Image 1 (spheres, rainbow, N blue to C red):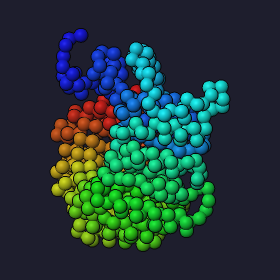
Image 2: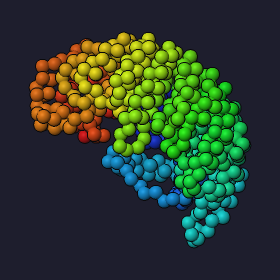
Image 3: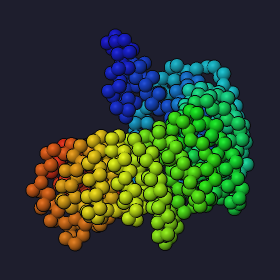
Image 4: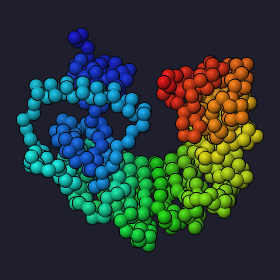
Length: 501
């Protein structure tokens, strides 16, 4: 092997795809180190898969391995979930399985040579299990995590999901306390998902956070008891003060609610973080009796906000026109404040299907035209005249590079408009409402392909194209026909290539 300084090897490794690094871990110590980092920088533990969890935790009982952990994901559940994978996951799984086998083969060889005799960490929670006994329990897994946690000193991101865990299930206070002792003060990103009782247990474990910049919370009602009053009390009296204590360092706040709760008091008592640049709200607007608190958050935080994701679709069936109108009027009220949606770089919004919703959308685009780079319009399908209005407004956004919107029909006039009004966008995602087939009466037919052959969009800078219909990617024929008319296109669906076989 050529004698090259380690820093040069690390520089070379920057150009090696992650999936290739594992194949190179036997080249030298640098690639071995990088491959180990890749394998252990993010670890997910699911307490329902106790045998697998204990196997992972045994590896993490070695400080040499645990010190590489940066993102710890923990799913607390006592329910066995079915494994379902899509076709793409199944295809990737075959290749990745072989890659993992190759990786572990070399790892095992290395550790046979470099076997560590010391057992400084208390791994009794792992080793006391009799191999002949029944499978490990939930408590065994929790105890093993507590035993390994002292070595999680480099964890900067923590994700905890406890959606289907009954209240007071296991010794979670001890588990959470071990986290705060080991890495709590250095944590930068925290994601919590579950019911209100789970949030209460977590917060009452007295976490010590000083550097949280990203906070994501996603919650629902307690599925093991029906007590909306108690859930509301936890949300307002426990969760809100917890968030407010973190406000000084918060840059990103995400609140997703699937709960049957009125969130009015939640938003009214929420302080505006002074450094907030990303706000992500997803909930049913018809579950909020007084949305003034959310408006205050949007308008008062506008000075620092660069990204807003606002998906407030009303819940319930059938479609509720009254709730839709209420949301449209509230959005209009927000945009009456000139601070709202100003200076945004990213906007992801459901503008409603109302006429006032169109005005809200156009106002928001124009108001942020000097800075807007990414625009996503959710769940509203535009006719060509409506799409024209949106694209006219978007044409003022000189920094716009990413556009995602829904249209009722894909046709050449729409592509003409896109190429004229937003020629500088590099990424385009269209969701089409009508069916894709060769029927002339459907959303696209042979006339489309014939007309498209007469087009050549030479000035369009589009690089990545994504088109879907009914939740499915369109066929290769359609994508390639469009790409043939847009010479700059080199990728479909953000894959970096045009192979969608």
